[in-house]
Image (tube, rainbow over all chains, first blue to last red; front, side, top):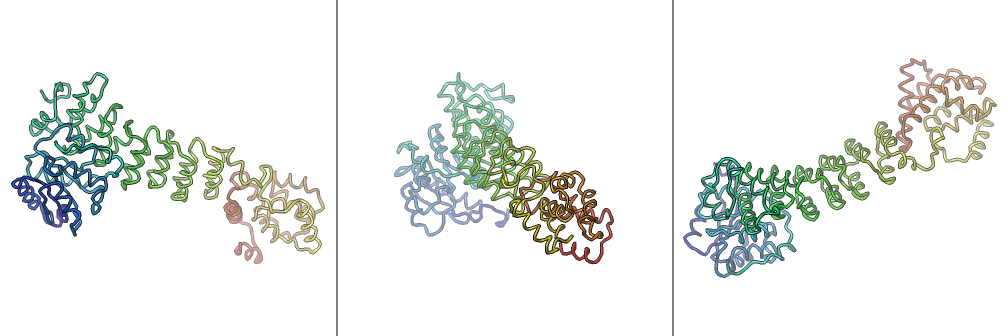
Length: 154
Length: 370
């Protein structure tokens, strides 16, 4: 696929993952898919900071669910509720996890996560999920997101 | 056990972890069958709540990650299940168009506020049209569709007998699409049209739709314009009978009632003025002449033309003009006075050509100006 044909080519992504190996693997995979650039953070709170200070518009956030110091669902809730002022409420947000539970899926759904990827995955799977996540357009309703309870421990 | 046919599934105890382990082994058809089965039985009265929670999780993962045909199968089953979790219907409503349309049109678990929010944020006409086709569309949803929908969406809304469309929404529809005949016809075809909307609509309708409006919504149309009583031929000239008679008497005295004046008044739709002027010129009863001119305009006008001492070469054209006025009056709405008058002129000119009436230089000049 040429860069011109690649719908991911213009994307500036933020990968939020506490495990360095998993984070590097995700970054490498995203770059192999042709995304424009990838920013990284090792926790939800670090991602929060990164989003608030980033001078470039972040198009896609990919966050692990289980992380110390701010999990992926807490970060998603902060974004959807408008706490992160630099980001659109309906910004593309995919959750990535090796341990999916029905409870986590329910919370992610309530917060209108654009994607939910279960590890391990192949690059094609990530590409398909990213493309679908980018197509998903929904009305962001902060009052609904504010009512969603996200436990600190998942 | 998960095998080929949907009836082969044993769903007892199926949880999210089981599904994820099996996911890679399932064909697209098997996943579609599983999705349809789960979506059909989720939250059923005899379903275990814990099992339903697991099935909801599996379906949500399918919606995020499965192939479009699988998501569509899930959408069809979710749309048909009145007990579907709202979160699934909401996710599907915001998914790709094919799956979204199914849920948006049929799911009973989507609330009005969901539909309003989707319409407000959505730029997809097909999704909006699906909402417009729902079995019941509330006033709030109709209002939002009227504000955001394109011609196709609004047409679908108007055709929907289950759509509750308030007058302010109708006004919005006419503001945005009122010049389109499909929309005009759609409004007219509604079972009920308020007087205010009928009045507004009548000002933009062509002859055929004006007639349709009048025949379908006679009570509403009958109230406008109030100054034109139904038993009056043509249009009012704004004068009382006494004022009109004084004006005619003055014009007779000044010999200023010419064929051009009479035909001009015919083109204005002023039937009463023409009757009374001809009666005054021919010194006959205005009421009797009026009745004759209504029944057989061209012949009655020809009979009174000579006694009125009007130039004979104008009589055929004047007869055709008067016959046109009476014809248009019988067939078309008078709510749009300009259109009504234009119809008289157009029919007169057409019939002069059809009947090959010979026109002198003055007449040719007159009709060219008209």
